[in-house]
Length: 142
Image (cartoon, rainbow, N blue to C red; front, side):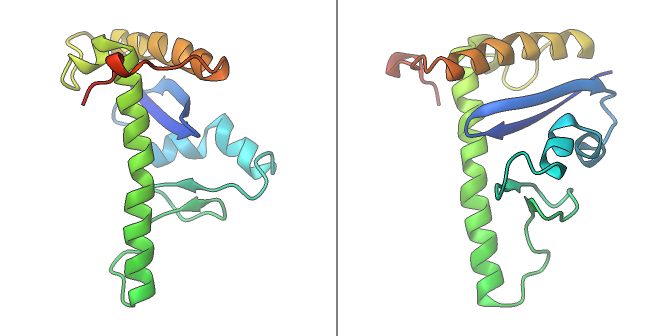
């Protein structure tokens, strides 16, 4: 079984599909090339948003567990709103590649084949972003 870990950066998607499905996202992250690039300072003062399953690192902002102050509650609200960009990125990906949208979130193939299908969508998606190819309004799905 294969697990796909996806990270959206400015709507460009970094991914890895080399770990079993039971592998926790934080383990995949801790062994990723992208993390090594962050550790090397390649992204300067940039940050990533992670859910509560990720350890707090200098460049990963996670929600505050049981916020006590108004500032902490405001931070968590902002965190949630910002993470919506990631969800919108997946919406764009599903709009561009309808096989992902019509699957209802569940491709009916063996896990290894599903990972290959998603990668086959991610590579041209990232290319389209690099080339600034527009996503036409008639392609957008909800």
